[in-house]
Length: 63
Image (cartoon, rainbow, N blue to C red; front, side, top):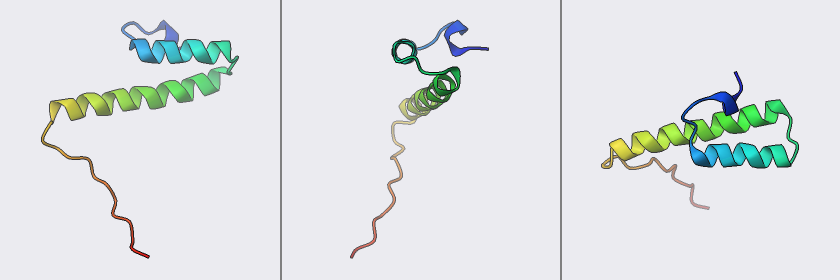
């Protein structure tokens, strides 16, 4: 199933896929981009539900 045919697609993801069409990106590239954007959307939704949870940031080693 192609992402464009999904109902309820987020407007930002839809716009991104339209831009990929303009750039004549192949279907595999669109699929990968869609997958990552959908993943970010889900992470964002989870973060919004858990406002007290702080993002884990790896500590950088001192030089």
